[in-house]
Length: 509
Image 1 (cartoon, rainbow, N blue to C red):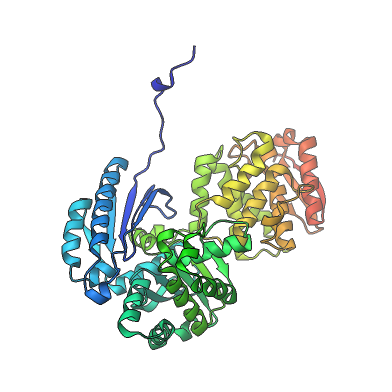
Image 2 (cartoon, rainbow, N blue to C red):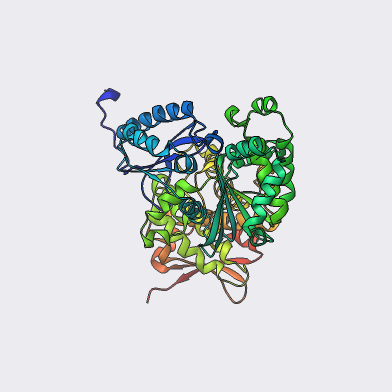
């Protein structure tokens, strides 16, 4: 007799949700994360485009309709935090609230509506948090972070995970609108004059420019759509400056009505987006970076990162995120950690000439190796491919994400005859695709030896000896693990790396 579903007690994963409320010059947003962790995942995300900064430079006051909409949104956000069980809510306000004459009164009313304290960030603090957001998701970031909001642009130099200093400029679209109306000057001249005066354009030259902010993300989305990019993931979507300028110039020349009819651009951004595009175009022209990297991480994530312990900050974000996937989806997460150590022995051989970055991605692949097992066998490869390409993980660029997805796809579908989806494979070169096949073959061999259970791999060794023969070495008491499937998968791996294969049984001492 089956139980009524209403009588089944759910066993829910334990988590301590935390939230960030971001009151910006254009939008008011609530993001709830699953915990104060190195790789937090959003469990709820909502924004309202209120336009608080509209007219602040001209009148000194925040837009009244925007204020009313923001207070209603904040009351809802407070109720949602209670409903979700948020333990800590970090509420911040930026340019509009700190610059408007009615900013202090708005913050008082906003705190009542939200039911939480709100911190008004200085321009310097806003820049620091933007830099932290980039470093939290791209630990090796080296370049200049640009965070464009409705009221201001923060530029921060980052190197080796450290903030090298920055500036705040009144170049948000709302501020620019007021400046153009008041002065009658060409917006291009206003932007260029402000950027040159910072003295930071030289700091951008030949380095990376990290573009943060909803308006610039809209430009990235549009470019993705136009170019048919195979991954719809904004985090670390990268363009050469000429391509980024191309989409900026295109948007800068579009009428508001045209932008509203574009599927990937929010209608309420149509008025301000051409100015945001102009700022990016002039910045790239004057700064001449080697690459433009768009980021979904910014001030909000920087706020969370600042709350972590020193030990948690030092963790690798990609491996932390992949470990979360292993804990949620793998049959034995500990087995996946053993895979990292087990494969280290094989890939330390000079035959592979593995770089630090390649080792990093191999470890990530090991942690993700069992995420598709619950699917029907015919769909495990496709399910894993979709999970990884769409996963909310950071610390990896698009080619790296494609490599991880293809490695686990081959792990399930087979590394020899299986062809990868053309659009995804186009993100990596032939050498990297062959490496994905090799690692997939190692994983397939490991799983047929261990049945995905821990404690077995440390008893086995897989290595290439001095005679360039691939050896699987087992102790005598585990000889029964060998068989046709093991022979086949060992031989497949050997073929992929250009070796002969052999199984060696060591006598017990």
